[in-house]
Length: 77
Image 1 (cartoon, one colour):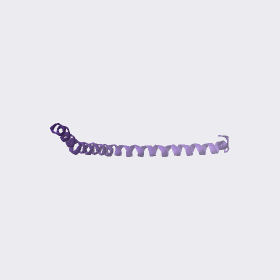
Image 2 (tube, one colour; image 1 turned 45 degrees about the vertical axis):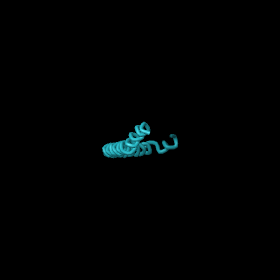
Image 3 (cartoon, one colour; image 1 turned 135 degrees about the vertical axis):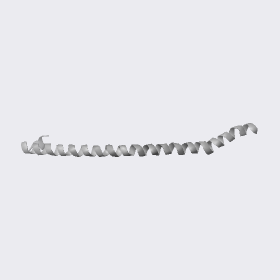
Image 4 (cartoon, helix red, strand yellow; image 1 turned 30 degrees about the horizontal axis):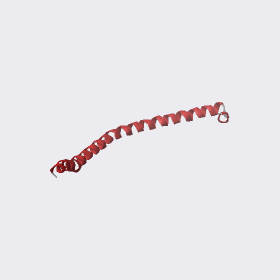
């Protein structure tokens, strides 16, 4: 009986206290990291949006030039 308690008590302590504490601290750390990288991701997303708009403007300009030089270029492509 005493030897079985030797294994049961540490298991209860680990499962009842250590494991929940570890899980809470782990996810608090993960949430903090996500908050920090969230700002970086938003800045990168804004920069990518700016680049995409510039590329769309370039394509529109190129299409206008091609339409002026050769109106049938779309059928050839």
